[in-house]
Image 1 (cartoon, one colour):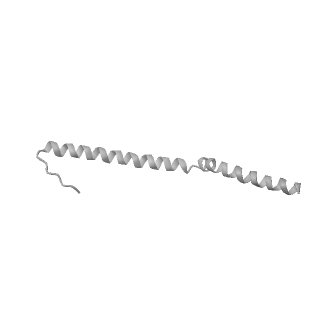
Image 2 (cartoon, helix red, strand yellow):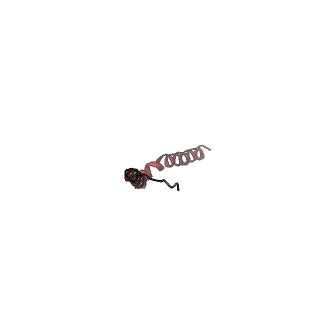
Image 3 (tube, helix red, strand yellow):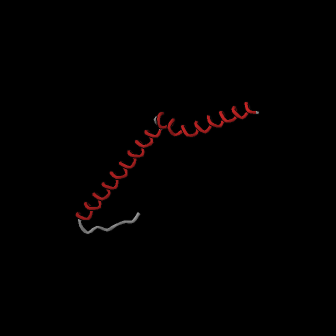
Length: 71
């Protein structure tokens, strides 16, 4: 960590305000990440993500059954 030498209390106050704002920004990023994770874990979102895979598997199974009947 870089140590800064301050020449006035105004400089200290300015840096403290900057650090406080940076901390608040990081807290909001964490809150947003938690919110996004919760949304992604909703059952409907999980099923929507699996829908294309389920469709491909179903089509493959149906195609195999049809091909077996044609043989």
